Image (cartoon, rainbow, N blue to C red; front, side):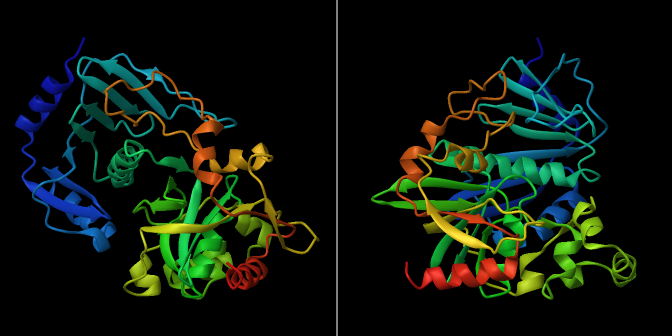
Length: 360
């Protein structure tokens, strides 16, 4: 059986990771080392608001730009979420930890007690290196008793707001809509929550929102993301065609909305579960609900941590762990929860949420 620490040591010896980047997100500190100065430059731009000199990190990540390693590891496919097809991630538990293989790109990752290493064509697949770094923050929060949610979050008018909904439901789009009204960004797709002293704290992850062209073209603050030549092509498409288009753009918050627009943690004042439909003819409405009685809505909030989760005891689960509603009840029972129904109308939802905030 391959030895994880030996694999990491050998790879770093052959590809000295002499370039560094320090990041801090709230209390979490991470240092990223790489043999590629260009990769560090890419990461520095992506994580710019969080760049900081770090001498004593909580987490140490190494990213090696190289050919796909041939470690002779026998990988097993990781179970994908319901409805998704095709191979994506594979894993193998080896001496000292876990190895993960990204089937489509060939990127490989090592997760040991303290080792966090990415290897392969990192520059070509820098989004996977970014996700690997962010996953370490999620793991750190999970070890501090937070629960992972499939949600977006903002701070608006001094209130912490979360938005959950099934994939494609518009939670990230709604959060960006509120950003144009002055909200601060917490997260676009992952939020971790923890009940404490009668309140619920939310922490966002430093991943930029990825939006489709329709979202960009319908928000003046985001329109600059799409090149002018592409805008002319998109203008010919119908609303439905834009909605279905598989084309994504990163939203650099500071470039679109200005400096000082992050609130990476906040107390949660309300959770909104988007159970609306873009083709509905019913008006957009907010209804306060009890998630204890609505497990169908709770399912939209819950999220499994995936194969990159390495618990502090070093015993990573051998398959996708079932998400237990019991993990969430201690946290959500202290939150106001609203179901959003009717037509998926972001202007109407914004107006109703703003009116509601006056009462909270």
